[in-house]
Image 1 (cartoon, helix red, strand yellow):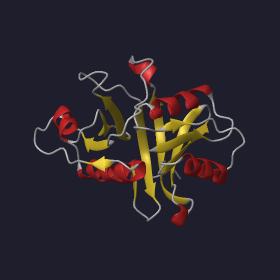
Image 2 (cartoon, rainbow, N blue to C red):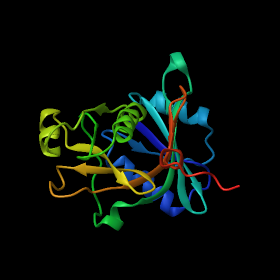
Image 3 (tube, rainbow, N blue to C red):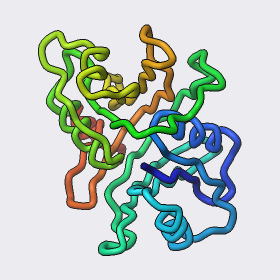
Image 4 (cartoon, helix red, strand yellow):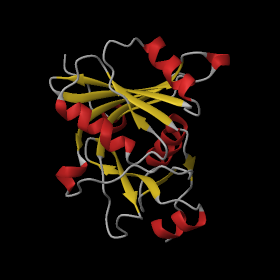
Length: 211
């Protein structure tokens, strides 16, 4: 379970992104930030009970720029887990889905990869599962997403896909449609874990920084 919020003074698009994420992480909740500090948010996540992660969406020039994941654990209070830096997002309504209900029942959030992806995608799938408190399931062979969902008793899967300038995360809700992802689509250019693991699409492609 995850408590989802934003940086101070979010844009409408950033709030919509937070609401979309609430609909793909089971039993999660989007919370309006207001003037709350990070410590206030952690205390609220703990007091509400059951929330294992705090996700803060930071905004830049009107769009979500960074996703920060923090552990909710009294024994390791405020332990930062890692960060995703984004190229951009595509909201559920922009993909063609509106009024998707949140998942208000216990089920695992499963993370896997698309077919025919590289080792970096598999590494990121494992990282994304760590950040979100999900379960990583290797794709393997010609295994379908529906098969993975059925074997893990879930209706929701996050899939790591190819993207020219990084990696993409897309979301499937099999209780809504079995045909295509519902979003949101998240375009990731850099991921960084607090333990030092990291990936940067420019480094991976051998692109030298300007200057």
